[in-house]
Amino acid sequence: MNKKFGLIGTITHDVITLESGQSFEGIGGVLYQVAVLCGMGREVFLYTNLGEELEPEVDKITGAWTTLQREGVIRVSGPGNQVHLHYPEKGERVEILKSVVPPLNPSSVLQNIRELEMLILVINSGFDIEFSDWRKIVAAAKCPIWLDIHSLLLSRELNAPREYLPLFEWKNWIEGVSFVQANTKEVASMLGCPDKVPSDTEMSHYGKMAFDVGVEAVFITLGKEGVFVITPQKSRKIASPGAEKIIDTTGCGDVFCGTVAVKTAEGSDPFTAASFGLKLATKAVEVKGIKETYILIRENSKKVKKGKGNEKA
Image (cartoon, rainbow, N blue to C red; front, side, top):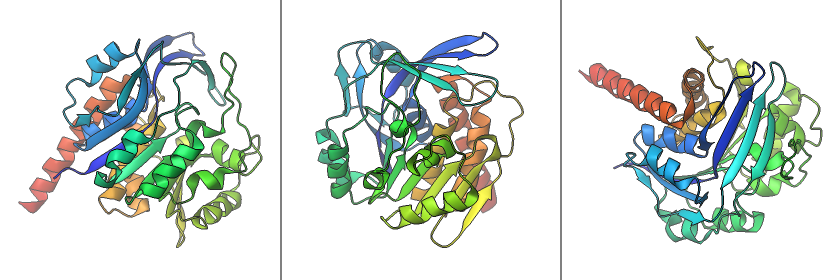
């Protein structure tokens, strides 16, 4: 019986530009996690508000994904969540929101939350869900919860480069959550210093504060360097295996999120799960877009299953 994953987030239309002048566009956001979970054969209950102008393209891409349950996808008027992303040769990417969809009504999540093996919230836009509604969901959940902080720390103005802002009430968002994912800039913002690169000691301190409100493991992504995994018992940096070629880094952290969530739900310890997630996230930068990501994950899952079958033989 397939495990049922609940997934809350925002589907976006991304326009991506590189320093070289190259540009491309396509559907993104929470669909990266959907691609991973469906590619790994998991039943996925997706909860999102989808702009009507994006619906045809989303249906075209995901129509054949038989394990995707769409009852929680609510069609809303307008162009949907439109994002411009620019990747300079060095430094952080520049993100500009052009339009957004309203926050999700939690009723659809609450209706079948007790059926879920795991619930994942990805803050794709910062407008994904209201804090009070999120707390209702956490209170009702009986399953492990994964929270990818992502855009929660970014300014919310439209048509302007988004900036990292301090978020001193971050503990209220993660209280009762099992697993937290953030990058170093996000951790720095939660610690009140968005412009400072946190040290290993500061990241470990962040982990201890997260454990105080019930978190079981913290995954701090380090870009090309890999991931810093922190549990109450121990912490360890896991190095990235390195990509043969880099085509598109968009969605890399999302692939990590989906794969590690699956592995932890299967019972893997956080370190083993993170190592597996890094391998697939590294492979994901060698392809472009949601469709190619899904194919990559599906093919990899077939190889893993085949390998296990050979081992048993």
